[in-house]
Image (cartoon, rainbow, N blue to C red; front, top):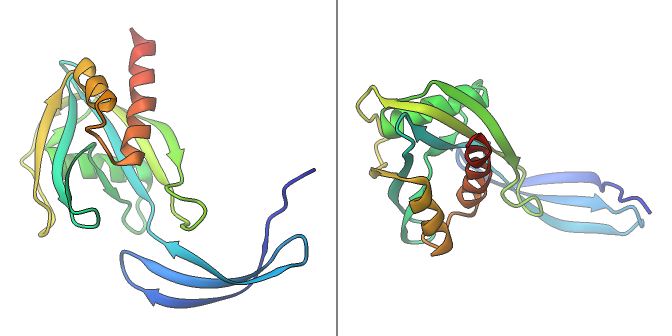
Length: 183
């Protein structure tokens, strides 16, 4: 048995904003059944970074997240700007959020945050050889603290469920695997 894609018969936008778009699709399933109210959230694509300094410290950022109403410990990252490729975006985000520049940058994962209801991807990178080269350049609503941790400390934070952003946990899994393989 093979899984077949649905056929989108129509779409209607209910909300169309810069950071989120909500549309409702009418779809025909391979069985012939028509689903008339499938809601899809459209978001821009994102990048995030497992950023490692020259002395093997992993950069994390602590910031308030209004959607969940929490202060969250995360890896740096953000939205890919229109016309920007993912690698350029991750380097820009790191420079803005941490002030660090890196010697190497390589992709480690491409993930869908929630493919059942949203269409965007998050591109995760491992950057190494980081050095502080600039001051922070944050967006007007962005307030964050940059923190440095050893690999063992990050592993313990993960074991203790202190990093709760699922995409960041996944990126750290991939990044730590790559770093372990280099040992």
